[in-house]
Image (tube, rainbow, N blue to C red):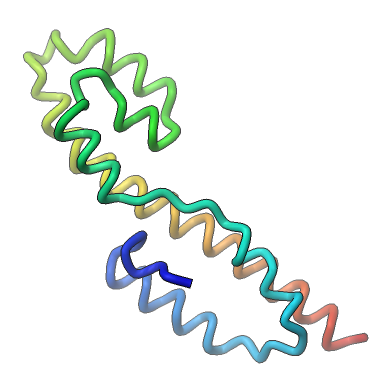
Length: 118
């Protein structure tokens, strides 16, 4: 599992430590981690830099409402919103990935405890 390019360093270190602390009884318990669909912050950064005027970065991140608002109102801020939003999309994708992995780790812990009892 290559998460280091999808998270910041602190998030990666925390999740790595959490994963190390789990004593895996059955490999099937790890299934929630294998099916995760994480987005790349680098792609979000590139989309924001090259196509941010068209809100492609927000649509890639999954923020449809913000994307439509940015598309319709970005010109009112003289496209300053688009420049600032490059950073927020990058950090937001990392946070979304962290949240997805954290939820999957909770599911792994739950499944692992089920296999320990069996």
